[in-house]
Length: 342
Image 1 (cartoon, one colour):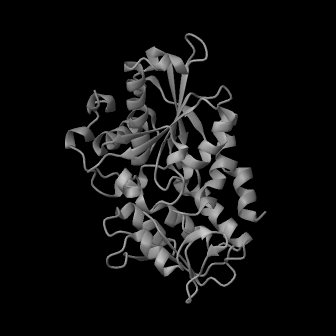
Image 2: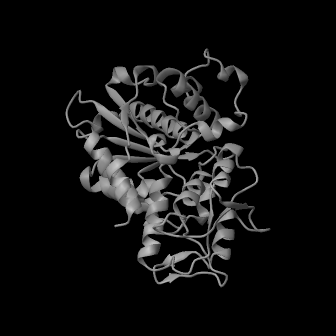
Image 3: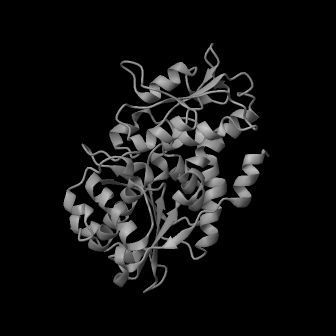
């Protein structure tokens, strides 16, 4: 095993904390919400697992030997981690090129730039993903069909390479299981590339066959940085859909407000996709109560329903630009997130 992986296993922490009553409207119904604080990981994001999984796998297959540059499409977090880790002595990649849309928030674009990455827009008529695949040799189809461009440009293809899910399964999931030994009945995660939810699902469906796995996605016509709508998933080749029991679509303003209220009431500096996952958890619980399904999740009458929410990253990258929510929601007197939902 390389040095980075050993450092990962030994020293990185993934805190899981109970969400207090101020942000748990279902506490009286014996529901406990838990947050997995991904922003406490290095670089403030769970994307470290996707990057390390892909780099380690590519190295194992001998794909990095003649690479002159890595190219990847990203909305920011993955690109920052890739820019940092690819040049590590374990991988020795000379250059990282990131394909990013022009409307990416400055707080998500500047850190990978400062880390030494080259940032370019997508080619005319192509998406960021299609651009990275085209310039990098075609993207990943299988370990035997994973080519490099003639100029030495190589695409790890986080959007199609199943290796990106492995550390979510092998490192992150056991960390969660150890901290929540009683288990949980509902798991909610934002869906970006789908790697997180695939890794978690593969592990916990074996450990807890009856767990409900919910994917939080952006509602049609809405925009949440780092989040994806169903329409945005057409270029994602990972088997993300089969990892989910349900999809819950979330609007942007409640997600932003949730992130702000978590800072005010708990001190947790969760990001907007984390707010998206929290809102999806509330919507799921409300529907389960309305439809009389909630008690079917309890192993015995009166048992606490534990809901695990994946907070993928922190608030800092989003705070670099004006938040697209009404000014009154920026005040401490702003409503609680569920007041926008019901």
